[in-house]
Image (cartoon, rainbow over all chains, first blue to last red):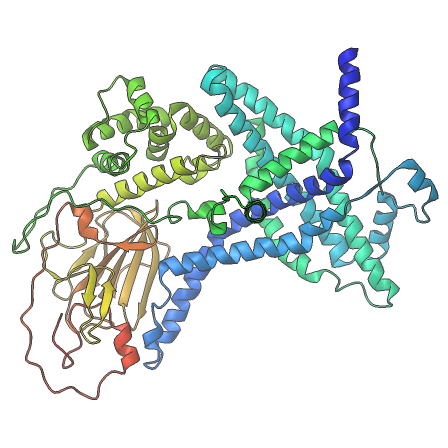
Length: 251
Length: 368
């Protein structure tokens, strides 16, 4: 009973600061997922850069005047170019798609009672059905993929960190592995259950607000956020194709 | 739209886990940590931004190439070198890393003790430990990881990588390790890279004359210092060029400098290139086995004399292939041809591109 009370007090104490840590947590969750996706495309970008370099070398070599430029870009430079491209891609998606997560806000009962517009996920979905735009369609989908990837990455880190911590002195390796796996699972459920859905809904909320602002200026909402959608969609697809690793949780 | 909850412990825990993961494992986190360190006037522990991509496992840092085991006098005309077995090569590669300052790690000692073997004090001893570890963990990559990270962590990483449907390569295993294991992964990657390099055979008959060795040399036409990124082996036109290890053809093409060129990816950050061929017998993407004939040597590209430019790259950086033959290259000085009057010939820009051949174009200048 006393423990329950202490936990409730502790929880209430943290609740006081949720306006600070919730937006940061949402941002971090989606950013980890975006990095996991960028890590997937990194090697494919290198293959692409190598292929482009071979093609350019062939083109340059065909004329005597440009033949001197053949092999000017060495393998190390090609690696740096590919990795810098992956990093730029990731940072661009962070700015265009992940940063709006920091705009996450909550209302208490009094604020809700007196607010003029009472938004719910139903009203957002209603507008999505009536006026589907690329931003309204793509942002929640890619955010869901990134949030799932992020939650899995967090769970994997928790599991491996706990395994090492437990296996060293506390428990035999077999026991440490089972305990770490269980706590990894718990981390996945916790992060998805407390933050995952909020990140997706926040992405829809942001997309809806951006589109509505454009409609109010009597302009078509279609081009809003197109760059973010175009850049994030391939990363989300790449991460989805790697989703077989999620099955590892049940193996 | 979101209702405020009066409680926040679980939300705080979830947010804290995400922030921890983002801070240590994303470039955005690295940027933030660097900025915080700058404001606080302390030293940031963030890695360079490009090092946060796992694809760079083998090329993140320049490999420390060991010195040749034996140095022979330059005037020895021919070398016949015994090839090391794959296990022995891996032992040499791992020993080259273990023998650096810092010495044999406690993890290596733990692995040795686990198998009841003697002290890890030579390439042969390391090879024995790795052989036993390979039998237990299934692959060379896992065995080498066990040597540097300890057997339990390696076993855990193998089991998780297999559960994710990955082959237990070092890349897949590294993804399963907890934070702070960067130095271990780096040591294992270097050991595997060096071990693979030690296992390479030679593309033409061992003892073939070297007309231009690896390293900085005075450029034959410009008179300035340039890095010659491979070794030039003097072979007659049409000589069969054999691939030095199993791999995949990464490039089979022709250009004005390298001529008909084949580049083979052997995995673990090791690639080899064979330039100036007269015929290429493989196509890009083809899988080749050690000893397969991939081309016939020639004198295409910026070359006037038949030779093979053989290049070895570790972590996408060129290194002297003779280091891994255990001997110093034997350089044969060619007699300088009489210097004819300089023709109106190639432009300065073209000369700049001419840095990969043993003998300059006929009628320009004497060989280096």
